[in-house]
Length: 232
Image 1 (cartoon, one colour):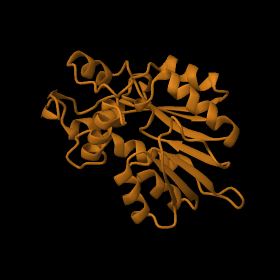
Image 2 (image 1 turned 30 degrees about the vertical axis):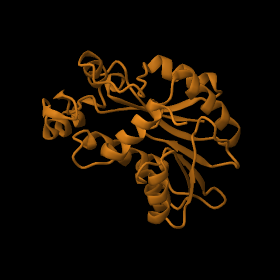
Image 3 (image 1 turned 30 degrees about the horizontal axis):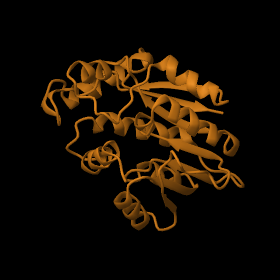
Image 4 (image 1 turned 180 degrees about the horizontal axis):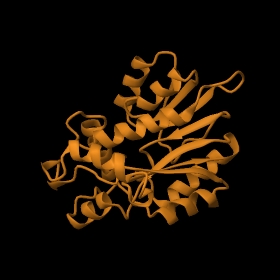
């Protein structure tokens, strides 16, 4: 039986994942562009890529554009079906990452906008499964101590299936799993927060988010809503 939390998570992402009506998309797009920039081109003999929590496929698209042979793992049945249709040359696996086991090695693994769906214990277990199969991971987590993190807790908008991480806690989990952090970046010090749930009554408009983050993200990475790191 699927738990109510998993049902709520699937419903939420089917509604809001890469939805143009989601005002946070301006920040998520900036993160996607950063990942595409940081990936670099695949080189001969180093083309195997794994994308965990593929959603609608933005990261798979970046991987393929960079010359990687992509495998995507997605929990949602409908999302996995759509990914297979959109990326016929990619290998798409429908699986719960808590029980999934890697069946190969990869030159790069991407975990973008995924970590929030795991408790600290679950995340550590997943990272330990990945340690033997890759030497490079691109990953981000939602920052508990950002404006966005503070706001959703104060307004009681945090979904029950979402875990917010402090930066020290997040980095500690990654290091416990045996990884070394080689790069850090904050994305989205400003988020288009709303007064009410479902993004009703936006308090910080998108134009201000774009302008403010261009100036503030490089200065205050530890206060950004999304904390991005690269691992080896």
